[in-house]
Image 1 (cartoon, rainbow, N blue to C red):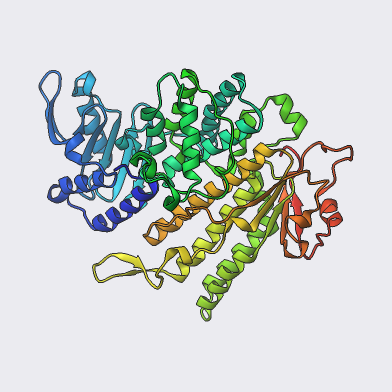
Image 2 (image 1 turned 60 degrees about the vertical axis):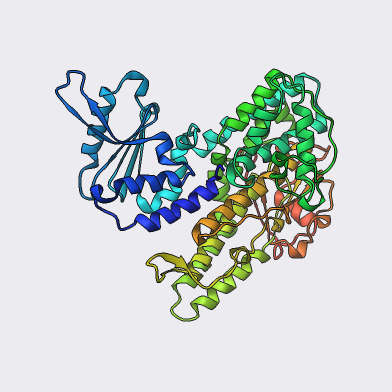
Length: 527
């Protein structure tokens, strides 16, 4: 069974605990690599061999590769204290001596505690310590047969957006347009993200469905998708007993994401291939925080100007929410952690405060401001929880967190603390999905920190995104002013009505959101 990245990170943490004190190459190198491949659910002997003999072309030199995966990997293992530079040079010599059809793309050198992974195709090297392995497991995506997507989160997200943009354009050109197209794309976005991040288990079941259970000409792809959406919207105990096993493994998602009928899209071969290309992409590296780039990728420049859509960078969003609320919360957490007396009570009070805060973006677009605000709130909560439940040494000599029984009860910050108003339906729905994506990534981080698996599926809570005109809507219908703590966002550059754009503070005041209820800071348009 293929593992999700969440499961792999969890297994990597166990690997770290087992090998944290190992230093001697000859004694345990083979056991070390057998255990390393097991992190990914792969039996080492199925893909790689130990002690592969190689000779230089003139046969004057030779040696043995510690671990060799033809066409994929050379691994050279050293004892602690020996030079990894020398090990890399030795591995590169072996690379030169191999037949062309066996030359690998990756070279790994390691002394148990220090790791270096060299990608010869990308001319890129990463270095890390053993305890950092859970953070770097996706760099070993090639073990699972996947190509690692390098680059910044922005570059990876834009690449994903471009893949979806191509599918959008093909469907639109075929006459599948409007509300149905927008709902279809949002549902597909969730499925693609879920397939790579542990929401769907085992991983790649959505890819397998499209690749193996639909015809190459695409003629039944649309019908299969509609059937899948119905399954995702049906609790397991209400599904038909005659449902095939490959469909039963899809979870009940809830959250109204898959509720409501849409027209069955008619795919052709090119559309199916565009969907497969998107499904083969590694969506675990996509950032929900900048997911608005997807919306931009499926709109023309003229439409962006007309509708006032803006992509605000994560850097600028952090500049805004820092002085608005984040800096104060950070100072409060640091003060609680530094207390010599009453530390536990102060940390508990901080954790209890965070889920009481309410946020509103009255021109939220695809939700970038809300997503980053939520992500930062969850990060603060996780730091507080780690301080409340520090790691201690167990009787088996391993570190573990004590004092809790259910990690799901620890985190109380949720997406339903966040509210938005958006004029266009498509970005409003993207904002909802982006918040769920951010929530799942935060749950993965919580799982990794506490050594247990936790996911909020089926979806029980949702950000409240109102599809409406913020200048014409009673904000109280979304969130009472007395319960709103912060108003934030990026106002559109042109008002959709005949009235001129109102400033954030004037809008908030006119809606009855006083200063004591809502501190309002909004970035300038297009920042």
